[in-house]
Amino acid sequence: MYHKESNTPARVRSQNLNVELAKVKYIFSDKTGTLTKNIMKLKHCSIAGELYPEGSQNKMINNSINHSTKNYILEFLRIMSICHTVIPEKSKLTDEIVYNASSPDEQALVIGSQQFGFTFHTRCPTSVTITALYGEETYEILNIIEFTNSRKRMSVIVRTPDGQVKLFCKGADTGIIKRLSKSGEKYKNQTLMHLNDFARSGYRTLCFAYKNIPESFYNKWKDEYLNASAVLIDRESAKNKVAEKIEKKLMLIGATAIENKLQDNVPKTIQALMCAAIKVWILTGDKEETALNIGLSTTLITQDSSIIIFNESNLTDLRHAINQKMYNLDLKVETINCTLIICGRFLKHALSSDLKMKFLKLCFNCKSVICYRISPTQKAEIVDLVTKYTNEVTLAIGDGANDVPMLHKASIGVGVVGLDGLQAYNASDYSICQFNYLLKLLFVHGAWNYEKITKMIYFYHYKTVVFNSLQLWFAIYSGWSGQVLFDRWNIFTYKSCTLVIVCFKAGLHIQSWSFIVHLAIWVSILLWISFIIIYDELKNILMHFTVFININEIIFRSPIFWITILLTTSVVLLLDIIIITIQRTLSNDMTNNNIKKNGILEKL
Image (cartoon, rainbow, N blue to C red; front, top):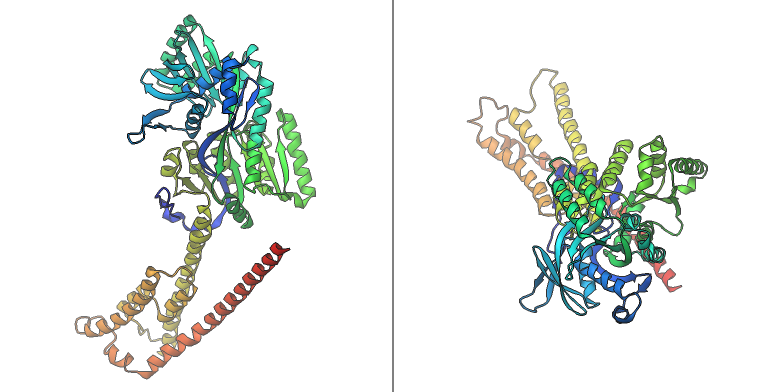
């Protein structure tokens, strides 16, 4: 599980959970950065109702000069190159600009704006400078209202080169559409249509809006925002309330589609997990169409799967829909092969009312679940409910700071090392670099640890039975005289070192032969023989409590001892060797037959 490209190995922080890896029944996964590469690229733009697909740079540049929507196009490109927190750096070797961004979305937008003639190249503490179509433009940064998961948008208030105060805003459609003015809805319907098309193609979407702010209104608002920023208790909530006063009556001018490709072998990984009877839940903040697309592309939704979608507008309709689905589920057993899709807004009602148990039962009966438009708090709540009500081992996997609550609520938290920082990496029990490493983590390390623990328990009981049986037999032989068969040193060494037969038997069944395994088997045998020799040599020192004298002469010179060791070992292990040989032969035959069948099918 070593990632060569980033030179990052897997990390284990909770070794006591190794056995639990083999008992995972539910996996809760984030989407962006966990299932995807988090390397984003601007693909399409929608500006003033006009679609600009990939490769239409010349069309957009020409329209920005002599088209009726040229002002909207220029404003759109300005928002792309100004509304962010990216820091530019010039490479000393090539003089190219390198962008350092906290979010891959912002980096993709800044790089994408360069294709249309707008280059962001300088950031100062109070201003930014861009190269536009008609030369350089410097904007004074008055305020930055940062993106949060509850707001789902970020805004930048700037003073333009001509002295006007403007607010540039970008974010999710749910965070912007409801804040438009009546005149700002001019391109709303066409933009939403393009957004849905982008989402159905699996792209991440962002809306762009702006507004002109009167100087007097801004000065009054600025004081309120400054006071909210100084609040000691619940500062974020206070700042958000003040921000909402200025983030309203916006003018919608467009949207973008950003590509974020899946990581390697994600569909195969999810398929293997589901074949192992592990239920996979995807928890994402994206739109419904994007969530549905990711379910299809990851094979979480297959061709023979039925889909249950809850998009009712109120609690009464949601209750009726859940009751109806539960009734159908009781009638049809085959509907267990289905995927349930629900929005975070409706999920809030389903988990906070009398519907909770019915809804959870419905989710448990589905093969997979996709929750979209949900917050980090809802992610944690879902994981916590499933963990408590099923009493099963749950695993949560994510890569960002918004996934940390979910990782803490799950039985096992797995952090993916990505581009969104190291918060999830540091807060997890295990950390990996790729989603497909889950297969090795669960099916190799988890399964082998589980198997070794069970064999250790069996061996412990076997060792106890053997030891006590000898004591009982000797008691009968000695007429229940109370004579001790083994003294304390022999008993101690017996419990510390394993027997010859047990060592070899354990070696036959261990799949991961390594230096440590060899060391454990051969050294334990040598330690037992060495103890007998040393123990006999120290008989004069240990005479005050020993009951054995001249052990070397009695044991090592006796042919019966050697014949018994060789014969007993051979007979006992022969049965195991025969069983293992038959199992491996049958397994190889089945594998070869499957390969031949697949080859014939491919030829047909």
